[in-house]
Image (cartoon, rainbow, N blue to C red):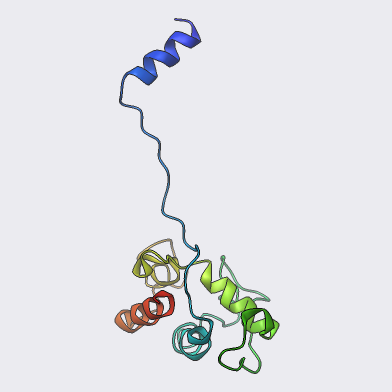
Length: 141
């Protein structure tokens, strides 16, 4: 059968589907910079030791999430572009792993909870309810 006819036969069968893949993580959303500084970094990322050496520390970390040791926190209300470099980089690195349409399915939660991709040391987030509340509050207006 010529290629053109084979293509028409395939398209006409109605069984063709296109896998659009998984939903994207980050997208335009109102993830509060101030809440990241006040809660997400200290009570989720730092509390679960995500920025530790050999884990997700910028210098020698693993995976997509890379965190710098932050210095002085930005004053609440300071525009993101005026934040200290380390805080801005941490915010942007964490934000790329958030599903704004469904925060509880964010890789920032599901991977360290052991619910998604392999997390080499295993699950590290033991208080899942608090973690989900933090991430959901962060991205919900």
